[in-house]
Length: 460
Picture 1 (cartoon, rainbow, N blue to C red):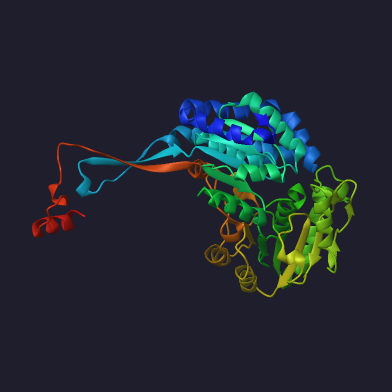
Picture 2: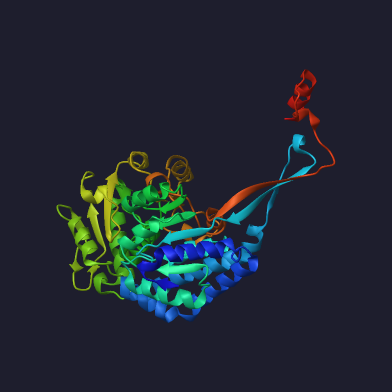
């Protein structure tokens, strides 16, 4: 149910009580909830698309592909495999424990908190929710208040479709989030920035609550001179300027071999106009910045930089054109902070090795991209660059594969989800051993003897 902040504690206690009754544990309940969430998305598609457009200026095509369609695919995949995921996994039993059987039994964690993000307000709230439901948990959802239309529609629709005894939507600002974080949840799942991630982790530590932190960072993109430059530019433009660059796995900056810089930049400009027209800032296919504060922050990144494309912005419509800056000062703010917007620094390097060294001297990113047709360079990227995900010759497409985990490493986050990995995140994998009474290995019991010790060494 959607509630006000005054009943946060009561809601938490109510969901804990529901979980203790065991209603969320059965396959039938979990499947019914996933079916209901699927109906919510399909039956209210128009209203959901409208909310996404209001919050972020997303076109119907982009919003469906990256939010509603993504979620529907995730739900279908989860339903297809759920019964198998729930089964106990049989494992071997050592000789000393024979006769016996050993297994690993997934069980739900309990009552969990999901703190959603504003840049993909449906996907980044409901994808972890799908995993938490599949694992059999009760859930409190806290959508981001920075995407109010999306938060409001989730608060309105979820109580109509989902089991109110097992899920609640709590809307509100950071004060509400602070009160929620004071509760002893069984797991907290947060998507957002590093600074708030630290706050979440500190609050969780008071209750020894495990956390999943999906953060971000400066995801690099390396362009080898030996690549299909036209396709490279097309895919970089798509990955960078989808959602006006407000994507945690968007290429944050490009490292390009100096010998092909001119060709790459020419292709990049051509592709920007091809996808968004001669005036991208006015394109219906191009989104807006979430609020005036973020637009001002992005405009500040351009001060003192060599802006070679774009740079225009409109405060009234909250839009900023696809913008490229060349060879920024590495110590400048634009190269020290995650950009999270439509500004793309392009940095020239003398070689791919120099590019890799540049990346390795910095915090581990959420994603890392390479465009190269050389197998040895591709393998070097995989072997040497530590990142949450590595994608070669494309951007962001690994998100379309539910068989791949998604999550950060180091400063870009901890924990993972999507598909089976999300189910595992919201489950405890309990060790179970069953033994028989008909045979007992007496050598393990006191009193000890040399003969018993000899036999134990053989059995262990």
